[in-house]
Image 1 (cartoon, chains in turn brown, blue):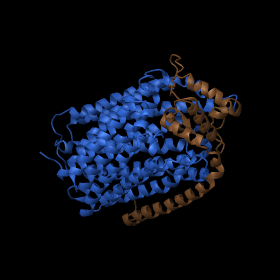
Image 2 (cartoon, one colour; image 1 turned 45 degrees about the vertical axis):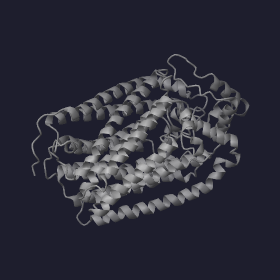
Image 3 (tube, chains in turn red, yellow; image 1 turned 90 degrees about the vertical axis):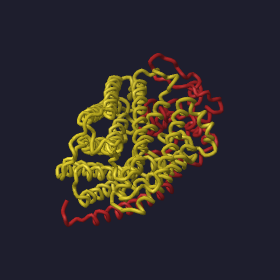
Image 4 (cartoon, chains in turn purple, green; image 1 turned 180 degrees about the horizontal axis):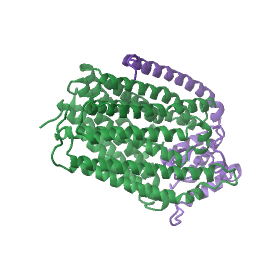
Length: 146
Length: 466
C-alpha cells in the first residue's frame, strides 16, 4: 500500500465509516419498524397466537423446520404450511391429526417426535401458524411447497 | 522453562484446551445429524435431530467463544506490554463458563427441550427456542456475566499498558460481541419483530464484530511469524475492518428481504452485501503479501499455514459462497435451502474455526513450555490435520451446494402444483448427503490427526533466525 496513505488515515476511515453506516442502519431500522404494523397485521395477534409462539419455542420446532426460510433445513418450511395444508377449510383438522400421529415410525424416514400437546395447545400452535402465513413477506416463498 | 513473555498469558491454555474438546463434540454431533439426513430414524428416539443440531451449533458457538477468550488472554498482555490485570478472575470465569456450558449441553441431551424450558423458568422471561439462541435464559445471563468480567479484565490490562491498534480493534470487537448479544434477551410476542432483531445478534456477530476479532488475531500472528513492521500490518488491519463494517452493517439487509420489511432492503442488502467479499479478498492479499515480505524464518511453519489458510478459506466460504446467494433475485429461490447450509459450513470453518486454530498453533508451543515451535514431526502431523480438515470441508461445501442447486431446481423453481414437495425433494438429494457424510468422516480423521499432533514430542526445531 502507498506510503502516503497512512495508518492514521486508515483508522479514521474505519471509525468514521463504521459510525456513519451504523447511523444509517439505525435510521432505516426506525423507519422499518414504523412500516411493519401494516405488513405483520399485529391487530390479529391474539393471545392464542402468542401462546402458540411460546409452544413453538418451548418445543424447539426451529431445530428441524424453517419458518420463513430461517431455521434448520431438515424438515418442511412452515411459514406457509397453513395454506399448503388446507387453509381456512381444512388446516386445523389436518394439523390436529398430524400432531397426534407422530412419530410415524416409517422405517428410514425422518422422524418427527410426539410433543404430547393437548387439543388446546395444538389449536394455539395452529393459530400461530395461521397468523404467520398471513404476514406480508414480499411474496416469499416462490411456490406453495415452501 | 517458561517461554512466555508474561506469566499471566498462561491463563489462555485451559481456554484453548477446552475449546478443542468442545470442537470434537461438535463434529461428532455433526456426523449424527449428517446420517439422520439419509437414515431418518437413526437414533431418532435418543437424540432427535433438533437436539443434535442444537448441540452441534451451540458447541460451535461456545468453543469459538472459548477460543476468542483464550486468544485475548494470550495476546492482550503481550500487546499491552504488561501482565494481565487479574489472572485469578480469568481462571474463575473459565470454570464458571465451562460449568454453565457443560450443564446446558447436558440439559439439551438429557431432558426434552420443553422440560428444560420449564425447569429454567423460561416463561418468566422467554428467550429460548430460537435458532442459535436456544440456551436457557439463566445460561444467557451467565454468558453476560462472564463477558462482563472478561471485558473488565482486558480493559484494565489495556488501560495500564500500551494501546496498540491490535488491542483496540480486538477490544472493539469483543465489546460489540457483548453488546449485540443483549438483543438475545428481546423476544416479543410478535414474530416479525422477533426475527428482525434476532439478526442483530446473529448477523452483526458473524458478519460484523467477529470480523474485527478475526482481523486482530490474524494481524497479531502475522506480526509474530513474519516480523513485518507493525505499522504496515496495522494499516492493513484498519483498511480491512473498515471495509468489513462499511459493507457488513448495511449488509444485514440481505436478511430482511423476506420479512415484513420494506422492499428497499432488497436493494440495500444486495448492494452492500455484494461488497462483503472485498475485505476477505483483501485479507488473502494481505496474508500472502506479509508472508512473502517476511523478515524472519519463524520455525512454526504450521502457524503460518493456518494464517494463510484461514484467509483463503474465509474468502471462499464467507466471501464467494456468501455472494453466491446474496443478491435478492437469487436469494428468492435459494433462501433456507441447502445452499445456505453450504455457505454456513465453509464460512464458519474458514473464518472462525481456522483463526482460532491459527493462534492455538502459534501460542500452544509457548504455553506448554516447548519453545517457539513444536518439533518437525509434530508440525507435520498438525499440517496433515490442517489439510484433511480443510479439503474435507471443501467437499462438504461442494456436496451441499450440489444438493442445494438440485433442491432449488426441483422444489423452488417450478410453479405450485408442478414443484416437488420438500420431503420428496430430500429423497432425490440422498446421494449428495451420503457424500457429505463421507467427507464429514474425513474431517473427523483430520481433527484426530490435528489433536494427535499435541501429543507428539521430539526434538525442538531450529531456533529463530533473525
